[in-house]
Length: 282
Image (cartoon, rainbow, N blue to C red; front, side, top):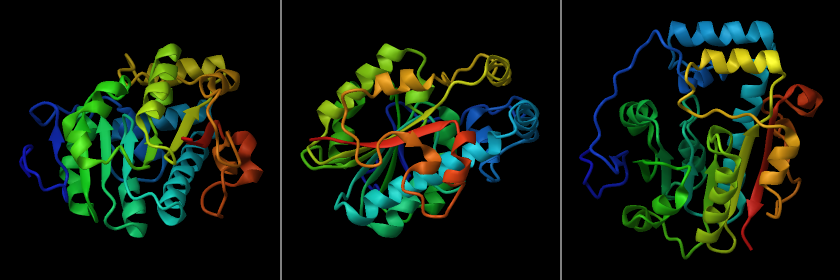
């Protein structure tokens, strides 16, 4: 599909002229590493080697990733199923590769517009090549800087795709903990909540800080860490989200948010280093 086409049943990338990125299969990439952790197929040997090495230091690397993925699917399904919201925006640097969340939503709300915003050309390339074939409803990918959301949220293109006068579901996966600056994260949340209509629901996810030796290994595997992966202590995550209202059960381990038997459950919560919760705009 051409970038300027108005047909949003398929994936387009706007904001700059799209060109396929140069992909080095010998260098691990966080998006593909995550895909391997959750049991997907879109990764290379370098990604598997990096994750398998991390697993020797942090045995719960696979469990934690799959708990986060199951939580993301539950949260997206819950919003699409019973809240009456019929439009969705995902701000984050990684599009889930094994079970795209637009598919989770469109299984329940086939006509709901779903917009991804990513700053990562490799993620955008995957969207163009793969998500197009999988799309079951209105789907769009915006290539832009989601960490400073005000310009994205005000962009005429996004305003044509989504009606900001009505409530929407917003999913922040690969955003809060993929931003180095804590004040920048807080400001981004303030800007997002200010732009949304009352009744909107905002799904949050944040990786907790590793022990020092594991943290050094994780960040070392990511080289210069262009994705800005930034785990934080639990109290710092709570401070970032302080003052916003959560729907029950609040901010909890990903294993403990409305468990439905899919993915790791409450009995494994101490081994899950991901916090999640859904904010509501009043």
